[in-house]
Amino acid sequence: MPISRHLQTIRKKVGSDLLIMPGVSVACFDERRRLLLADHGGTKGWAIPGGSVDPDDLPAGTAIREMWEETQLQVEPIRVVGVYGGEDFLVTYPNGDQVDYKDTLMECRIVGGQMEADGDEIMGLGFFARAEIEQMPLPDWMNQILPHIYGDESRTFFSPVTWSPPENGLRKGGISEYIRALREQIGQQQLMMPAAAGIVWDTNGRILMQRRSDNGLWGLPGGAIDPFETPVDAVVREVWEETGVLVEPTRVAGVFSGRESHVTYPHGDQVAIYSFVFECQIVSGTPTIDQHETLEVGFYTPAELAKLIMAPRWQRRIPLMLQNQSPSAYFDPVDIHRTTSLRQKY
Image (tube, rainbow, N blue to C red):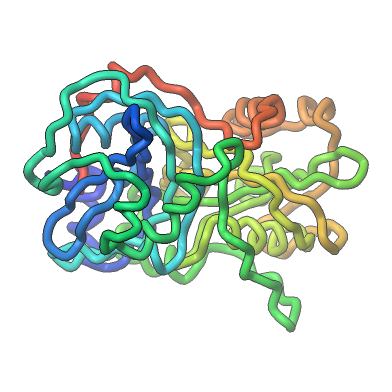
């Protein structure tokens, strides 16, 4: 299957260079609790279906579309199983294109369709028991997520934190070297940007908010995920860099993307942000502004948030995450039947 138009325009300018992309993988079971795997052919072997997210996609919409394109099955997303990143999720395609995926694993329920492999990137499909799967040669990323697919169904998994502040205490800000180099090639063209943000609670039940220097609006502290970085490491790093507070993530609060995530910065750069949001507790530090991205920081009760001038996406999302009582992450629902005729992916 061809890559999306969005990726085509980027690849024309960057060639096979590394791109950081959000992806969605899909876990589906049959009535015997056997997991659906797809034969991706060649050296890729068997793995669950999935693919990259486009600028207008929602996480659930991507899961529905990818399952339809690859298997001809209609599915209904049930829950976010886990969020992932790191070197295991680096993919080099046969043509040399490199993609560093920041992945959302969703469990879905099959609700219709007749299973059939697309015959292009998927050579075969089958349902397998866990004991069978554990004897199969699997890619590294599948070995990482497989225990979570069969794990605690009430929570959303994430990797252990490995990042810690530098010994010199220097809080660097601004865009990363990866983004800077990419912008030299693509200019101000829209770019998919996986990012992580934190709902940081203090002991008085207040949330740490940041007023950004680029637009003057309040929002949750956070920023873009670096190459080979996990979403959970990114949120710890970004919160510390922007507010000076070291945090410990306790749960995945939500995953978000879609048209409301399209942002044009004052200097003209365009992004479509895919957000991993973590609830966090403070380990150490007192909130202070940095010298780059933050004008103000402060703690506010949930009731006080309505008084802050925020970007519309955060005005909508924060209440949804706070109202979600499930340990599993919030995601926006979509219409199954409006999603199955969209573009095709790698």
